[in-house]
Amino acid sequence: EDQVTQSPEALRLQEGESSSLNCSYTVSGLRGLFWYRQDPGKGPEFLFTLYSAGEEKEKERLKATLTKKESFLHITAPKPEDSATYLCAVSSNTGKLIFGQGTTLQVKP
Amino acid sequence: DTEVTQTPKHLVMGMTNKKSLKCEQHMGHRAMYWYKQKAKKPPELMFVYSYEKLSINESVPSRFSPECPNSSLLNLHLHALQPEDSALYLCASGGWDNQPQHFGDGTRLSIL
Image (cartoon, rainbow over all chains, first blue to last red; front, side):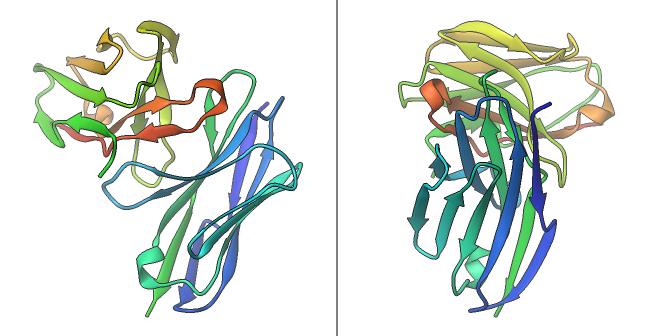
């Protein structure tokens, strides 16, 4: 069965304290892994797509990486405005998006 | 600003009312989706339209009725909803050929 697990569920960081979010997946025929950011009361905002092991994408303080079993979202020197829920999702042979439960990040000044 | 627009942003309705949620995208995407999201949970897929035809119905109760009038518009007709249907309803488009889905900001629905 296709499955996505994110850890930790919640993460509190001080401003400037770098860390990583994990997304482990089991899927039959990975077609893509997607990272989204969701602010309270808003829809998920697309961040990155990764398609194959070894691939990396960067945007400002965020860097996403992919292996055959997991993906990491690295946050370097985070700021309070990076506080949000980060969702990982995979697209399998069915074409559906399978979401993890999300990691809620709080960055304190 | 998102490229997928949903209206209304908020909706309060009684269990006997009939209302509709609307979604519009102008990105030329051929697939559109409805999701339901409860607090502190990920989005749950409800329906998928591909080339204006319903391709996936995730066993959603018949009190939810989707409609795709054209390639840019997606509606969700609501009738006789239950209090447990209160949630954020998200529309998305894209996802074709392994491309990402893009979400609107949703309609916050409250059933009295």
